[in-house]
Image 1 (tube, rainbow, N blue to C red):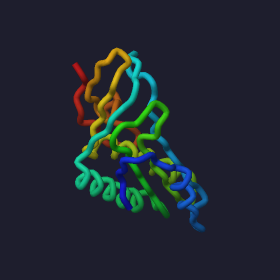
Image 2 (tube, helix red, strand yellow):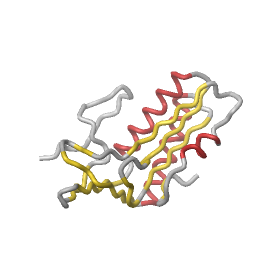
Image 3 (cartoon, rainbow, N blue to C red):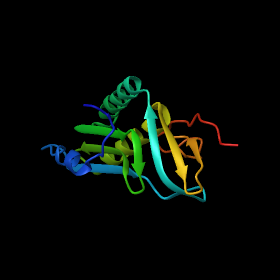
Length: 155
């Protein structure tokens, strides 16, 4: 499966692919582009990645999550290029026998993708400026999945 795409993500279509007789729970997370960030009005985002590495890393994270959380299925697709406000930037879908595994795995996957995969976010603001941001804006040292955030706070 290709994990990066330059066109809109059709999460409804992805979700339909997740019907599995052993999955009593399917969780879909959609990361949407909002119109503000840290008090500034955002017009749109643009994502860039080193695609061969990013695809390989996402595939590895999904395989690890399938084993760790006993998932039947897992998928992650991240947008590249320009994404408008309310557009879908990333989708993670997990299917398991029970909801706890599906929820926990979904959170684990999106946190790992946002922190570890070389995908860069460029934010554009209504005042005409722009800046490269971190793909993950988490402010904690560790979350429930136990991984550490290694990025530095913006000055």
